[in-house]
Image 1 (cartoon, rainbow, N blue to C red):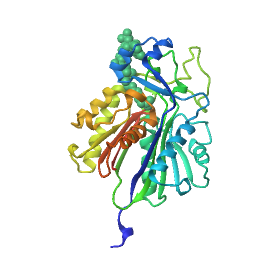
Image 2: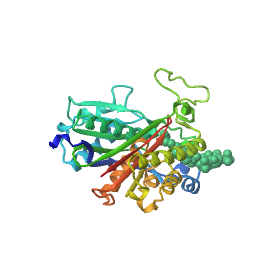
Image 3: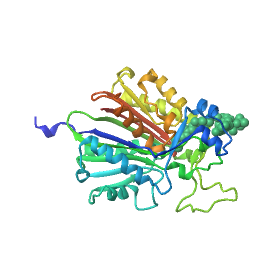
Length: 330
Ligand code: ACO
């Protein structure tokens, strides 16, 4: 049998991440006048602190640092990238895409580059798209990034949302591999739940805000989002296991979206996974939306927790609603 008749997998060849320098603790929020407490935030969400991008530091700048680290880890030069996909809901500009801005900052030109907006599921959606490009033979080396400056669209007077989010970026380099890599991807969306988690301004809808200044910020019905998230994640992790004929005991690591420790614990319980096998960064990063899964993955790889050959389940849920999972052998 010829070598090329083997299936082509998209395998993670390197990971990288970047967090802005400024750290804002829960107590710092209280000092800023937010009516909250470290006790409330920690007990409801598990978040202790988050990073905040500096003035003038853009999503593409965070993406660039994460990408350089991922490229170095993979031993891949920027010139060798066939495709750049950036998952983000906080692009630098309306257009061009943050992916093209990142491409230029990487000092290259010519390869395909585009953004994917799936709110907090942006990275796993981007990873899914990249996987399809590699499996179809349309690309051999892909840079996949999740990068956000979500704190730029927070209302710091709204304690329901401002305590939850942070800025950051993560990246992976995917390479075509004949042995193993991404085994399955399962993405879903339900646009009927738009109003439960959104930022209702935009180009076509207009940037006008009402008298309560309610249109310029992230708005969320936290309780509803929580319930939908737990249910959707339960079913999407089951779906991944069934599709691959795997028992939950086969998983080595769960790398979940980092929105809320209680949501993460609920998914871990569903999988009978002890928290020692779940990657948790939400305590230090807050919810970095598209950045959260690749940030968690990079931390797990660089700390030596995740080893080559292990089975990882990545999942995310966010605005849209959009959610999904990626099962891969690292
Ligand atoms: N500090 C102190 N009190 C607060 C705060 C705060 N920061 N925020 C809300 N409260 C109060 C509320 O006003 C309410 O007071 P009341 O009972 O007097 O009305 C009380 O705390 C309880 O509020 P709930 O909303 O019921 O609290 P809950 O236990 O549901 O926790 C939370 C809220 C943390 C937001 C939770 O619902 C959650 O995590 N939801 C999911 C959010 C999420 O994952 N979002 C991101 C999805 S990904 C994306 O795409 C962006």
